Image (cartoon, rainbow, N blue to C red; front, side, top):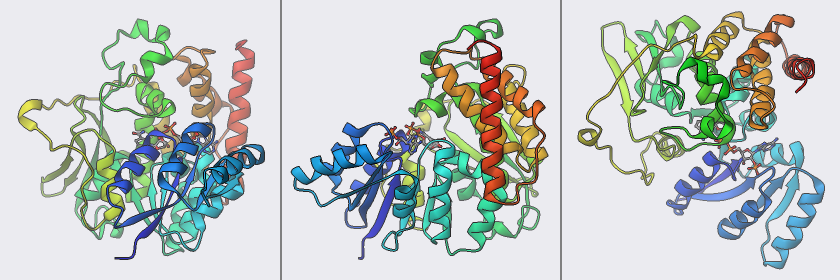
Length: 395
Ligand code: NDP
């Protein structure tokens, strides 16, 4: 069997490491072509020594030079590239078959689009890229031979529950609604009055999933579910009102599809990202992911609740941005990235994340997102306005 060449964008992160774990279990099928990182250089060097990729990509030229020397001293032929150019090169390289898009945030947009335009099998974890540039991203997908497979456990579940011809349209394939499940995060039951005092450590302590810090805060504010709602609309051709968020604290059902005949199909599994990663790597085949079998008898009970939008205003803001369309989701995403970073740096309260996003969306009207430049300009403008909010409030 010819081994597929895999690039892992964001290899030092939570999804990146889970991907390397699955890839390593199937050395007969996959070979690591490239790994990329941004700040964790020691970890990247260790990954290179273990997996011996052809390329590694870092943030800047100085880091690249230093890593290149250390790898050469260790006898490795790995070539070290840097910056956006390096990321796009390893995403679109002719020898690459599969690209895991697992850079966090807007920084992942260009390399992920490069992989799509180059016709790769793109495993999409970086939801922010699709949220920002939805129409352009889907257009690039249509115009290339790329295959896009969702890694978010919810979207991967929906993909598994939909018929293979779902691209014909939700109504055409008999789908009534998508039921997007949400754990509710660490603050599902925290008294509302205490939310202003919660710390980054509490926000990052997710009850069911172990994830990077940005998505952990997004899960705590339920902005993650808002971004996922927008992601689901683009991936599956749904309108925002066809996606219903259902709080399901056990995170065992990863999402459901409700059909017009009353059937509801669900995908279940232990909350471990190696399941959707293995699914997308091998699709339409199935391979071992290293995840243990689901023990329903031990779990015993599955609960469902409606989301509380007073507690989680970010979910409402995301739904509104999805309805407005154009550059609104890109602005929502950028304002959220600035706000989450400020919260992680203890410059703002948890509850001010939503205040900043609402302020940015009120002050700047959405425009048409006709080209990538429009999206990037909206992103920059929202970052500037969010920065102004921080300045006005002395943070
Ligand atoms: P992590 O923070 O753990 O990892 C992020 C990765 O992106 C790291 O490799 C990091 O490098 C790299 N990175 C950060 N900033 C930049 C930048 N400016 N340029 C290039 N690379 C950068 O995040 P996760 O793995 O948790 O999440 C990655 C993506 O997957 C996110 O979009 C998230 O929403 C999505 N996702 C994650 C899930 C999870 O379970 N973790 C579940 C579903 C989706 P370094 O570490 O070296 O700084």
